[in-house]
Image (tube, rainbow, N blue to C red):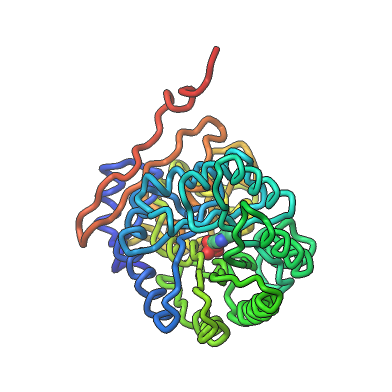
Length: 406
Ligand SMILES: Cc1ncc(COP(=O)(O)O)c(C=O)c1O
């Protein structure tokens, strides 16, 4: 596994200095993933909009912004964070199925590149917001290309019957309406077929459908500038690298020579391999035929195993002793669904031993909560072969009640 970037000696020092549970990110891996995207897509020169939902840590977002990337945001809060992290407003796009009137106004006042709208009603709301601000809203529509991405059903988003996007037929009507409006400017079209997608074939199919649609729309007089193919490219859990080259091959052929600026919204494939979650064993116990390791991280820190049955490889930090056994690695939360791994093969770790949960850089901290009144974990960035810094302090009990009133 990622020993080159997450050396046991360094992880031990981080755990001693920052405590556990702690999310640890590697600047080198994050930048390497960005470089891999730039290289794979160099013939298209697309705009990359980092999907902040995968990991909205300011320190990581600032790295992406410094690399010239924009941001894909899905709430007013993410837009606020994007600005704080230094993303340039003309490189920010706003996705999501339920943007409120306040969020749309915020986006327009900020001067973002475009809003990816997902329904006629949302477009009407955007038009109202633009009229109020006496401006023209740059509009893109999220289309539902009805392709099967072969991923978990909770993260399948591009099939008819999902709440996301609009059909091509409806999109055509909306674009023709928008083209007549004084307050709307149709500029783009988008799809996002799902997350943790490992095959380029559904992208190629969706891209062909999108390109054909944009061409047809142009013949009706509505000329778009941007073709946005979303994010979702997968990472093999525990793998050190996600190679975007097959994705680039699937998309580049479709759009090169069309004059359209391609946009990508990668999240997980950049952030997942960049992070591990460090946790310590609190107790060992046997329950029926199972060996349990009860650790100080729980589903409030990393909910993916409970939510999607995600499998995160877990390893002892440093060498182990004795024969390997199978362990269920569970947290202290009062839910049977609270597990980080089931059947992990480890040499017997005594209480106090440090474990690393791999591929935890995406949808880990960003999905974490204070459930069971557990303060959220700290976050650390590895900045060099033996250097690191705290990028988010551990929450305290005071933080748990800070927003409450009597
Ligand atoms: C609209 C949109 N774009 C991009 C992404 C990023 O997906 P991933 O993190 O799998 O790359 C998502 C994730 O669900 C999304 O909904």
